[in-house]
Image (cartoon, rainbow, N blue to C red; front, side, top):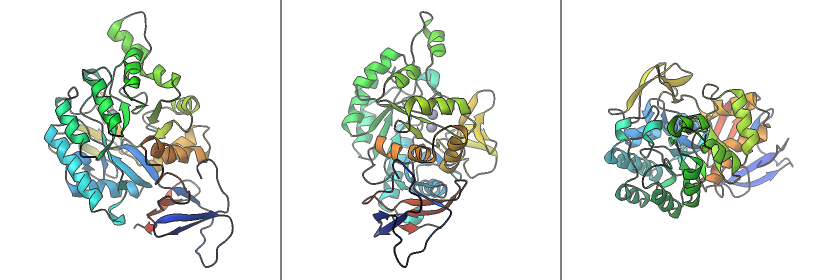
Length: 379
Ligand SMILES: [Zn+2]
Ligand SMILES: [Zn+2]
């Protein structure tokens, strides 16, 4: 439930919707005992899985990645772009639209919109992404993409030339507006906030800190993205709770500071999810940058981590194991909170009457046992 567990509850779904949540046993239904029924997970930030990256730019790659994530409990997904050419970005958005229009439950997690994440990253915070495909916001480029109606989450580094115009256009288009891969100051964040920015991508990863700004500007030391997010109750953020990116103390700190209504779990998973350890490309199959996976996390030797290779089921288990958050708060951070931030909580994100019957069944240790999309059980 949005704010509590309901022991011994019954959930009744008809024609793809939740029609009743009750503690009176209805007759003639299959009863599942010793398990949890939870809302399907909502992933705001995800690049791929099972060998496919959304930037591959074809419908089959989109479906492969969506299926990989639905097996791990994600029923609503926001395929995420990385840096690349305008043509590569256009192909990715078109492939997601085709997959969305032709969707059936066996295609896996349902696309609620594209997260337009790359290419507007800061040069000094581009991380593992292909740096040739990084650029400042180009109005003719993003206006065309926003006009498709597919983009529901939009990222840009706040210090870039043209960032505020981008934020205003994205907010106008109804997007969750976010700042990421950025070395911006509090002052730049304040201007971004006034232009509609309300969220920061993967907290502590590829973002500014007091130390990074001191290295850039010297003293007096300045407040960074971190302080801005922690000091502003309206700002939300997300953590990669795979046990590799952030220590238990940082996960606990983020949860205590922001609370379950402003902290999202994201996978940020790349194409190496579900694949054996080895070398893979981040982004497009032919032009993406190389990274390695050891089966636990992605990394570039001598450089740092390169996003996760596990699903939302793992993020939920790690958050529960490593923090003081209750089970209902952990589930909220993987479902209702991201749904609210992305503007889809009328439809999905919790077990409430009228919402889509996107439902998962978990065992006692939070492994995903069954997944229902619109009431239809998937293999
Ligand atoms: Zn990133
Ligand atoms: Zn990412």
